[in-house]
Length: 285
Image 1 (cartoon, rainbow, N blue to C red):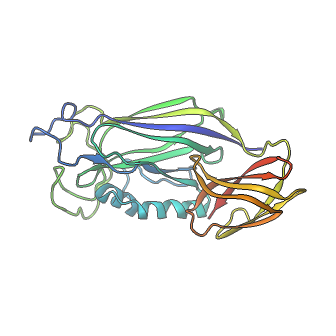
Image 2: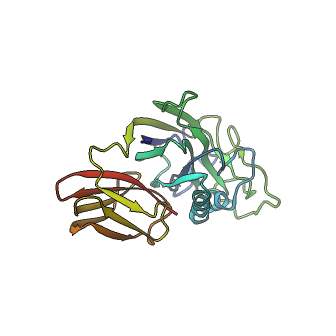
Image 3: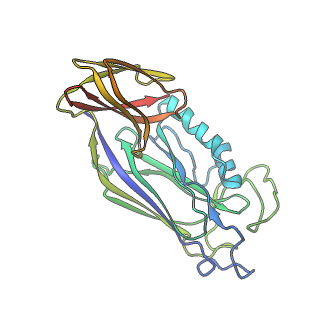
């Protein structure tokens, strides 16, 4: 079987007038953080590289807080086999506060974590972590990783203050640190804590009750009972949220429509008429 790890990710903001004093005497009106988003992946892809050029997805994220193109980049990497899943955390409506992503399941073939969020409002400023490895050199899962965050300039807009008008930077500059540069101080703007919660041996079950194909799947997947009919089928995403649920199905063949789901990793739990349960991983392309 393959061992997956369960992690909690906590972003704690340190963005305030006290820590990053602005000449106006206060932070901009409506100061907030956009969704904390990213991916788990392997070394075959890089989504946000400090000192490199921002991708179109990172440009939109840093300038507009819009993640559509960024998620398209992640989905392309999932199709190419270099990423496992996209992460779509919550936003934070104030400058200070916390964003928590619970029960993130990390596959041992995709142990790198990248995340980003826009500092809003701003020309193109953000926080980001790039390809943080959740395993140590011996292949063990790390218990806890704490990362100090400093603001970054995505290099796509030349504005110098929070509410500067749009000034497209052409050609783009590399992504660079804004530590100690106006309007920020040399203090951190936040921390990300990545905490190990346990492991999930998805295929280690007392009794396997179904087969599933195709896997990876595109639009549909069919479950086939081995000895008994199903009574319950539940599809979860990797943060433990129920995405689809089928109760009292009383069938040994069930086809599930996946066309409305994003690409990534899901868990399928099936219970048969004798109460046996199996959980398997499903990849949606």
